[in-house]
Length: 150
Image (cartoon, rainbow, N blue to C red; front, side):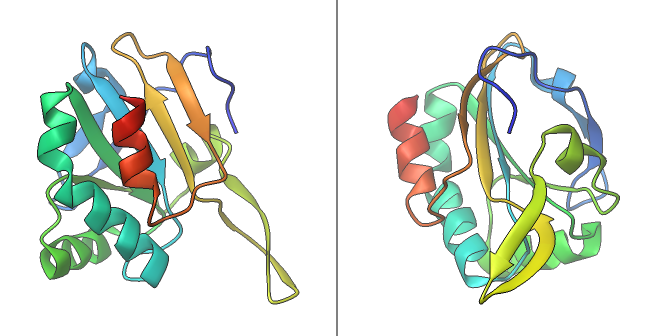
């Protein structure tokens, strides 16, 4: 996980519609950048729907939400449409941004060890500095917790 106080690594990735987004596009706004393991899984769906339900409140506080996983643009599009998600999902199948943000880690699941995305949420300020970092994210609680942090 990256340290609070460091400059957030720059990136450019396609969203669920194939449009490119760069971190620099959001200068002057707070960015909630959250990394999640996989579209359409129970925890990831709870987290995404929670962010989507509260999206107007995040916007009122001057924040945008960007969700990143290693799923494809097409997978993100289906996920967005199935749940009516109100924010941007970015596709990182090559894991460049996932690795730049240090969230590709060894995970244990039912005793089996594998590599995967560790659910992590960063809050980046208007100047591109990480002001909050959490890798002990509880999917269902994360959206409300982040709203309270703002």
